[in-house]
Length: 257
Length: 331
Image 1 (cartoon, each protein chain N blue to C red):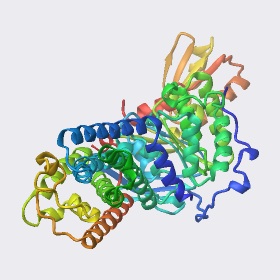
Image 2 (cartoon, rainbow over the protein chains, first blue to last red):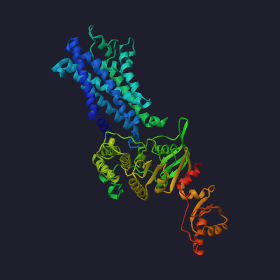
Image 3 (cartoon, one colour):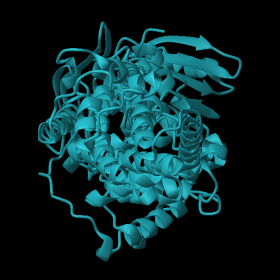
Image 4 (cartoon, chains in turn orange, yellow):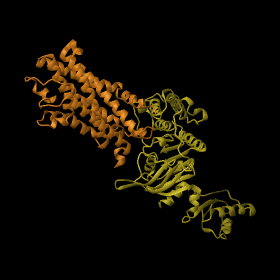
């Protein structure tokens, strides 16, 4: 069994020209918003990048992850093409593992493009020498794995998982990091902030970007704690997905009812 | 272009042969023992015990009889609620070893519409374990076998129903399986393609493959095979050879229609036979009801030869699948 093919075919499928074009257009739109923000808010390029990255790139990341994660299984079940996958001589746990890693790769790629364009919007020609950009790459990679493994598992256990994932991505991930107390530890965004070692926002930061980037609360997580937490989350979610997919039946909804 | 037979040359090339672990051989490749499947409050399959061996077997029943449920159980997409199902002695659910021996053509008409027929089959060939070159070669072979060579580079989204059926069949043949399950495979095929398809089934059956074909079109099933599994509302009403099943149905006497210009003379002879239940005169002759058709046919030939009674034709209008089906489901 060619395990690598499970991975490469999924990546190829996610990067079909039309799909990729849509995501690239979305990245360019983010860049446009970044340029508008820099022109409107002013301030230092580093501070602008930091605010924009948290408010746009790391808000965009769970959206990409949610949409891509549905392609792992939920979409196949909806379109009934799941039958072609389930009747192949491929161990189910490997199928879900490789497909999840593939969507995480695709998510990280789109996230990285968005981060580069935001860096370009904030820093102009010197966008690649942005030290925060390199740190953000780490966060994007870890975030892609964490979000995708969480969303794939969600899609395995509930119907219409897309709604649940989008609610998580936009409501939970926006509100919880801004809360007082220790609730922020339950948000992936807070851990990504720690991994990226993002500086505390300036007192004159734009309130909207502060809310969007989840920097209103007090984040006391250390990078080591967050790396460990994200590793555990990813491994547990992948393990659960592999177990669930191997043990459960996946029938198109109307057939199961 | 029509269906082409699978030949020795069309088998997997050695260098691309996928590793197949041998499963224990069994006379019955597929075995269901008291298998039931519930979907919540609805029963899909009810206490079915059956075996499927080499040759073509038809899975027959009306819509909702449980044919697709049985197919899904055998292909390991779902588990039985009670009872057991084995393929080569192994439980099929999520069992890759079983899938190496099994080809499945589902009833659904869903595909990755943006792909071409060739891309679709090749993708599934890779998932079946072929390397890139092997997958290309094998795809070419199965596509040629189903007569899609000239159309396989078009997007599936633009395919007719018949072309979709052919592509589904092609992907079921990829690993040259011993067991082939075809769920309503003739839907959408034109008459010529149906004929060719049935010929291919016969050929595969003769090669020793176990083929289970589901259908609710009795006429087509009759052309495919005499061996049937008859499902009705989830229950297995009958299984085995059509003729044997018919003979076992004592409750319904066999009807024999005889065309002759000496119907009265024939009737006089038949009246003396103890196993004749009734006779009706028709426009061209008469129709007889008997519980012992074999004895009756033997006597009829004696009558024709020894007494020179002219018989233009005779037929048994209820010795067919449709009648058996109607009798068994009480309709």
